[in-house]
Length: 169
Ligand code: MG
Image (cartoon, rainbow, N blue to C red; front, side):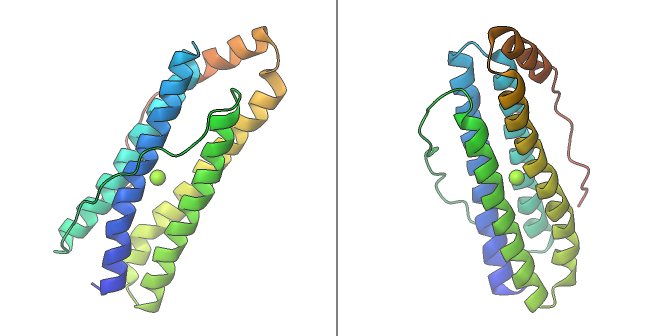
């Protein structure tokens, strides 16, 4: 595998684990605020991020590439109001999209068509991640302003269940 592509995927393993760590911190925040549905939503999101990390890890392993685990950063965000983690999540997903695009560009340049095919799934996944984060902000703006609306929204988010990723390597 091209050295740059391998290095970027290695870094992405860390970035995905960081995403899981950040979303667990959001879950932690909402648990403390008594919003168990919001917490559940981010716990499920964190599980998805761990899956992403494991997919990249497995992909490198399958291709005989060395994997190096680096330290995971402390979640970096400043609590504001109840909508703050939702906005932070959207910004973070946009950042992750840019990282996936960077790996794709490197794979394209190296004519690494196998990696591009794997990344196709992640490109689509990022579209969904950004939409989910954006939809959540919209719902919070529409319904989160009074206690009844917040209760209903919290109940809806409590129903989110984890499902394994559709990508099989
Ligand atoms: Mg991810």
